[in-house]
Length: 108
Image (cartoon, rainbow, N blue to C red; front, side, top):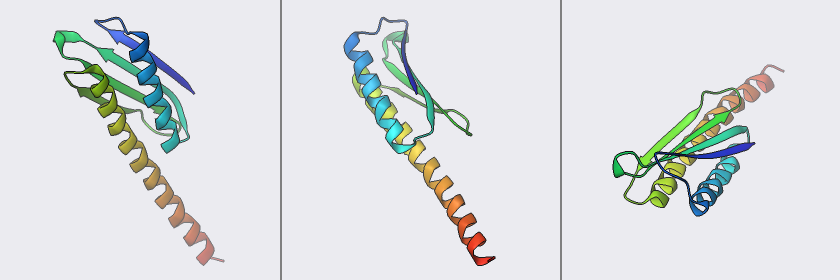
């Protein structure tokens, strides 16, 4: 799994990069099929924005974007949004497979 942190209209400090990478690593815990996580930190117009794009197997990319007066708070909130999205996606898949298993067992 690859984590890429980039800056748009700003240079990313090592502390910001490390914070974004730590938050991105936590996302893998909720869904193990993550292939790549891209974090784009933007300072366009003076409003710090954090955007996470998560590529997973067999699904479309998950995206979360957050603006805040503080870049670290934006990173935290965006990663929390993605955490909810990934958890919900995993629950849907688990429920789908659970239904298939029970149908298979009833047919025997």
